[in-house]
Length: 357
Image (cartoon, rainbow, N blue to C red; front, side, top):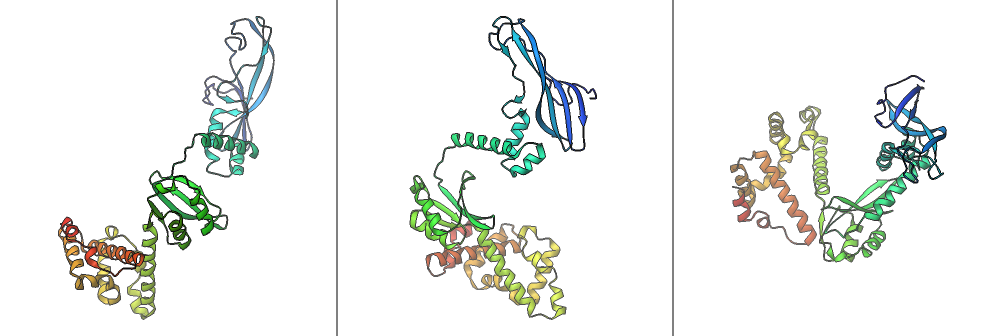
């Protein structure tokens, strides 16, 4: 093997004796200094070498190549206590025949990637990766203390060709559990077994009816809040339907006028450039259908007062219009939830309008 500097592996307690490289692997022969004292009786200077052999230990990959350290492991005989011992290796995990840093790397990566991927990357057996993961998961499980969240999040995750219910603690931003399915009976059964479920004050979810029914049945004290992501997505979908319906009615020459309309319409108000704002004003002038969201400014005094207060505070007109749209959307959804008549005065109170100034 070729002689190399001692610190090439960044293992200062080992001496690199040589190296051999292949297309996908690197092999290093390393030696470790003699121990200071007998590990059995602690007497210094009363032991002699008693055989050796090269033992392979896996290490972190280098330049995409898997690394094997061939450690010269020696046995020693102590003349004081008449015992034979093999000293512990620094920075090594003997149970898995790998370096400590590789063991820590596998612990982390096995939570983020499949076992086979980590095994192929490091040169380990898949079962070894699985055993490291299981040991780490068991350790974390012993220290985990479950607490019923004040704000519970319920959503779904599409995994392995199936929708699964995922429950989270929104305040702590932690995952509580992942259920096998999102069926109402499964969610209800889980919530029934929830410890101190009366502590749940708010449940954030999408508009999936089984979730709503399960929460109402098991957590009647909790206020149900629809995740704003889903509300905004429905609003964008509605806008998209109006846009597509409008384009179908246009001639080719008129349709070209709305080139790039979807990208601009879906932008947030503060992200719209001056050029794009001018294009939007041209659209609303040419196509009255796009002015539906602005009609409330002309007919509802509460809306107009709120809008003017925002403009007086320095907001751009398009930002004020978007604020009105969000307010209306929130109010309409609240009315649908509570089966009450729409009243814009509840959305734009005097205190609210004065706060905008």
